[in-house]
Length: 185
Image (cartoon, rainbow, N blue to C red; front, top):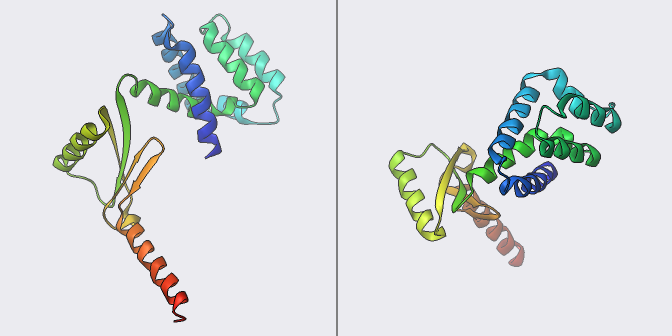
């Protein structure tokens, strides 16, 4: 949870910086390329995440390897991450930046969790209903989790609607336990 908050915070800061830049597309492409390199190069990834490598060594590395090859804004951002001790979160930050880019304009990302995969007709109906309710274009992200037994869970940003059967059964069970305590059963 803490890593998600850190990644989202830095992603929002980076996205705010580049939003009005004429080089926005280049910056996003360069960040994408960098993250791809990190994912593909195990040694590079290890270098970034290991606490045994000092932040000074990491800063020097970033300066020598990337300055002049990547956009200065991106290199400066990497230096800030290094100073704050969050360079290892760059991949998570990139995923959050992707989400922000996806949501640019009047789009809203909605996560729908069901016990089984939704049929296309059901997805379409859910999407239309949510678009009407939220007054925005919905980017539907389907998640399947058999543990919820049935029903659905919908998450929009920080709002969660839990209509799962598992959730309702837990509420009923808690209610029965409370009543049994009240009546000494």
